[in-house]
Length: 104
Image (tube, rainbow, N blue to C red):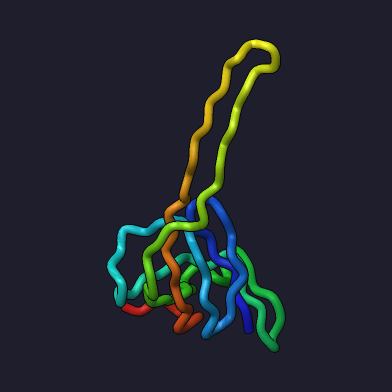
């Protein structure tokens, strides 16, 4: 069984027990977060739209961190114009604990 959920205008395919790095979330390590589901596939088939309206992916925050540094270097040829800049994208690592109906 797997599900596709949306977070930060990106979609992720996960199964129970998977660990995923997402865009930075405002949550502490150990917190539980829920994400709305776009699609669920299991032995019964594929469910989308209104069939998964009350389904969520529940996950636990494992870590907060920053990705590897990338270098952005811009220059204009023959103009002696150069700009060097670095960037480290922050992320939140979560572990999927359950896929199912919303906990109420």
